[in-house]
Amino acid sequence: MDKIGWEEVDRFKFFAKANLYTNDLLSGKLSVLPEYVQFLEDNPEELLPGLVTIMETASLHSINIDDLLEKFSEKIKDFGNLEDATNRTHYFRFLYHRAIYYAKHQRYQDSVQLILLFLTSYNMINDADFKKFVVLFEVYRQYASNKQTEQYQNLCKELLKHEEGVSICDGDIRSR
Image (cartoon, rainbow, N blue to C red):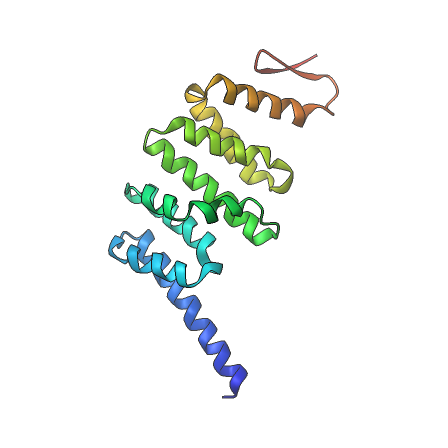
């Protein structure tokens, strides 16, 4: 093999390693988590998809990962600025699984805040994800603060502003 061939082999080894961590974590082999975190620190381009895996794992296996969220908090703040489609998809999946994680830990207002963050980004998402977040908001609406409910209603108004004959009255969508 030539140099390019060996580079391809190395690239596939890298993907295989990342996929093995993902498979192990999602199947409940939580002992690899510290090693995976180190892998993510060594390979920052994998951080966002890796955190999606960690969030999903935390929800599936009821583990607390607040320390990891704190550890990567500065980098997590930057995820919302990513513009390419693949990273936006990872970011929205991260928000979704983080909202689920917070709800499972009875941090409902934090969950609602992430749901609203996602919904506010509606013009950059696909319809299937948007629908899941609307349903998620409705499930946790009872835990939303008045301010969060108002933000949600304003978002709905914004989405419907060009729909003739439809308005929002007291939080309900109605035909005029």
